[in-house]
Image (cartoon, rainbow, N blue to C red; front, side, top):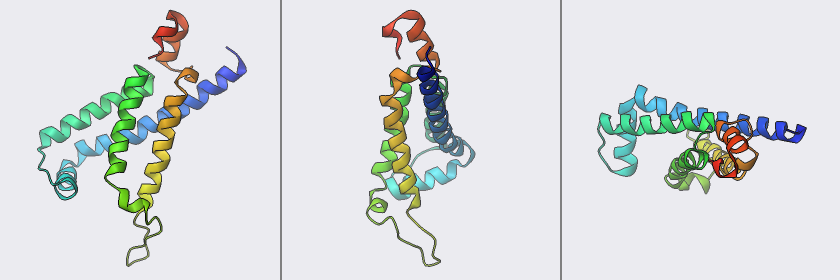
Length: 151
């Protein structure tokens, strides 16, 4: 491997681990505070969800986070997390059009939407850089088993 391959591997490793950790925290909170997610589903989406449904979604998210952190089945794991995050973006459009709104106490109320956009950009970058993701299990498989093992 060249020095550039090592830099690319380090960069995608940092990006991959950061994004997996970001989504993992949201998934873990579903397990820790399922009532909060029941409330959000009811008030934002107008649906009733059971604890079992919340735990199931959290388990799928955690499994994808582990796969992404390891760099396994990269199109599936990175893409799956990106799609889940994109769903979050679609539920919060209003904040994108008023990013500087403040609460009555002067607290910025839409700053999470700005963070959401940055995270979506990072997911897109990670997917575009899969071929440079040298420090992952998928990258190792691609190098040792041929170009069709890039997942």
